[in-house]
Amino acid sequence: MKQTVAPKSTPSPQDKLANQRTEPSANQSPSSVFVSMALDMSWRLAIVVLVPIIGGFKLDDALHTTPLLTIVGFILAMGGVALVLWRTLQVANNIPPPKKDKK
Image (cartoon, rainbow, N blue to C red; front, top):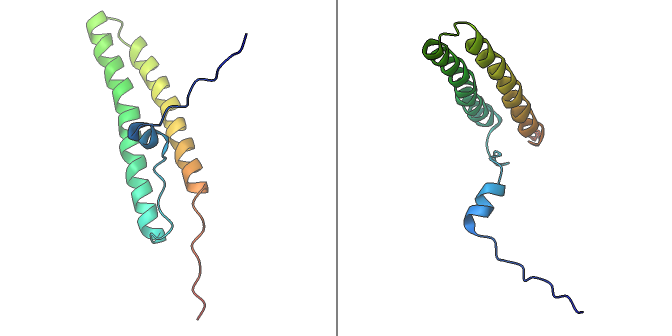
């Protein structure tokens, strides 16, 4: 029996956007790259830290399990911090070093 190959589908614009990483372009100054990466990392850290800890505290309040879920939220937050730092360092390592102007 002869098997046929399924036709390749054309990727949608959403697929292309999902595959693109938000890396700074090579024509940006090093200081603007640093500031943009620092701001990006800061809001990610804020979300990763605040959501699990506040969520654990509110769940503790509702379920009357005072320190348990807050501690679990804190542990999840520390894991999230490590992940955000790791991903930021991976992006920073892929940026080419700035070229020095020869005068």
